[in-house]
Length: 331
Image (tube, rainbow, N blue to C red):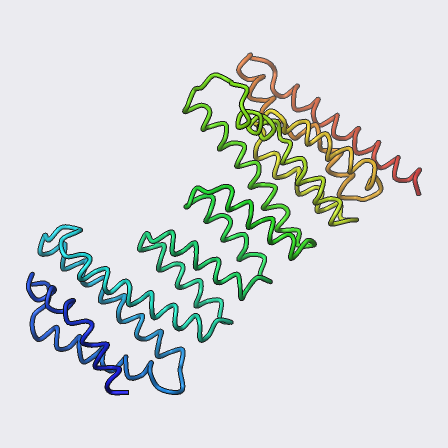
C-alpha cells in the first residue's frame, strides 16, 4: 500500500517542481500539499472503498485548481504558461478520481451529474459528451437524463444528429414516456429554426442537390409531422397529451408550416376526443391563439382593437357552445 502511494506522489514531482520554479507555491505550501495528498491517497487505496473518501479528495483538488488559477492572475503568469504541467495535471487527476468513483458507485446518478458539471466548467465538452454516454449505460431508464444529454449535444456540441439519435434511442426504450415525445417534437422544431438561420447566413441560391432536398423536407415540417403522428399513435387515448403539442407549436408561430400542423392536431382532437372537456376547451379557444398577433396588426393599422377582441371572444364562445352541444348529442 505504501509503495503505491509513494509511486503516485512521485508522479506528481514534475507538477510540484514547475509550481515552485515560477513562484506559484512556496516550499512550505508544497510540503503541505504533499502531506494532504498522501493522506487522501491512503484512503482511496484501502480494501474497503468509501465514496466519501473519493469525494473529499476531489473537493480538495478542485479547490487547489481554483487556487492555482487565482495565483496565475495575481502573478500575471497568463493563461497558458506552464498550464499543461500544473493546471491540466490537476484537472486530469480530478477526472481520474471521478471515473474511479463513478465506476465503483455507478448506481449513484449524482456522481455522474457532478462529474459532467465539472467537465462543463473546465470546457471539456467532448469528455462531458462521452460521460453522458457512459452514464446512460447504467441509468438508461431515466428519461430526463436522455433529454439532458440530447440538449447538451444540440446546444453545446452543436450536433443535431447526435441529439436526434439520443431521442430516438430513448423512445425505443421508453415509448410511453410522454415527456420524451414532447421534447423530441420541440427539438425537431428547433432544428428547423437552425436550418433557416444557416440558410440566412449563407444567403445561398437554391440548388437541386440531395442536401437541399433534405433541407426542403425539414423546412416544410415533414419530420416534425412524423414525430407527432408517431407520438399520438403510440400514446393512445390521452387528449391532454395531444393538446400539449399545440402549446409547443404556438412557441414557433413564425415557422410556415405551424398553422398546418395545428390544423392537423385540431382535426385529431375533433375526431377522437370531441366529448373530452379539455379538448372541447382547446377547440373553443382556437380563435384566441393568434389574438396577440391580430391585435398588434390592428394597432399598426389604427383599427379598433377592442372591436377585434370582442369578435375573437364571441368566436370562442360560439365554438365552445358548439363543442358542448356536439358532446351532448354524442352521448
